[in-house]
Amino acid sequence: MDASGIPAGAGYLRRSVQVATDGDHVDLRFSLWSLRIPSDYIQLDSTLAAFFRREVPVSAVRDSRVRSRNLLSLLEAQGCIASEPFYTSSLREVGKLFHAVAAEWYQDYYSHRLWPMFRETTVSRAQLDAWMLRTYFLSRSAGVTAARCAALCSVPRIRALFAKNSLEEFDHCERYYKPKDGSIDAPAPISSLAFDQQMLRLAEEDWLAHVFVALFQEKTAVFVRNARSLYDRLAERFSLGNAFDLWKEHLGFDIAHGHADDFMEAFADDAQIECERFLASVESARVTIAYLIGGLEQIVLADVGAAAEFAPTGGTRTLSEAYDHFCRRTQPLPQVARQCYTFGPRLQALTFRALSYCTAHRDILVLGRLCEYASHALRTSATTGLVSAAQIAVENQLRESSYRPGEFVLALRALDYMLGSELLNESIRHELDRWLSESLERSPVSWESACEQVKASLIQGPALWDHPIPRDPFGW
Ligand SMILES: [Fe+2]
Image (cartoon, rainbow, N blue to C red):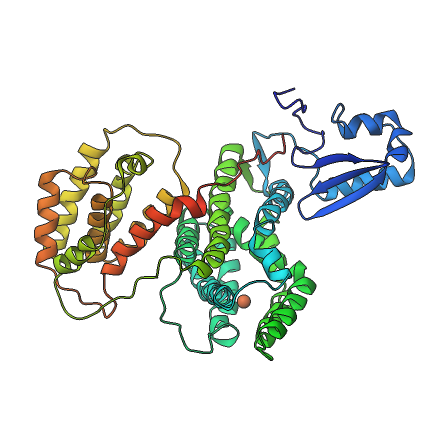
């Protein structure tokens, strides 16, 4: 038994199941549902009562009443019974366990303060617009992130699964969610960007986590009735006519094409998964869900004039000019905020990744110098196992800009600047700056937006994403 007084162990009621006695009834709450049982009924069998008091595991319940057996089967099927941690487990078993973990995440997602505002239609027009734009961006990235898995996942059958998904999803942003005012060139909200880039990383490095998140998203189709009535109420409240008809059509599409079933197929295999790998995948997926929940918070904040998204200026200039322009409008993080980050030891892999995409002579030299610096100076700094969701978001931004040396160096310089020039040393900073001053912006979209994204993650990220509730995936 631990400090909370709740026995921890396989077969006991999962720790996240709440049991509350209310007069003549016992209320069970888990995920998004609750169940009321008469106290008398439970007390008639002492072993059943002991189970709900978490004094015995389910195997010790001797109650043979049919309704009790059905109740226990229901709890089992809903993932309410804690599992035995494994050394290795088949993917099939991992899939079952994930069902219980996802149920807890739905609770986190749907307990956000935005949802009652939607239900009671007290959202403002600005919040509604932010929600519609976020939905568009979620749809826009679905085919793209699936494509990364289809191209780079190391497991052939998972590649095939995501190839099918990407082909089904890539044009849904056009068919169902394109904003009427054509604002498809607006920058994505920082939480959407963080979500997309994390999914891209998972596609390459952790397909199990990618499947967890994809399944979490697709299984929301079970809330289809609630979603339809929500769309109707919002359309009526804001006199939007049939604005949500295409959204409703899309709900039907996902269900008709069995997207959730497709992802469940990923678990239909006897391959063995080690516990450590499973726990790491659950943690990576949990951070990804934190970005989704942060997206809900950004919608709420849309009403109070949240930081205006950065509008790129364009025009031809050197990257130094873009960087200087960024610095003139930006303060480095205060000392106390900088201490939360431990980028140093984690930069080596990112710099090698950037070097691996270089083709020009001078790019190779400067990125090579950066690799030297990250391999020697930064590798020796203290490492820590704890990395915040905001730091992961910035690492992913660097990762996704590694294909374009200019954007990568600019984003890294912005990060160093935000961290009070504590990341790089004088010599490498000088080298990067000379390279920036010789490089021209060639993109129609200003590369300064790379700096702005780093800044937004560091400043807004901690409030949006860094308050998740870690739980033991086994339910202990
Ligand atoms: Fe879709």
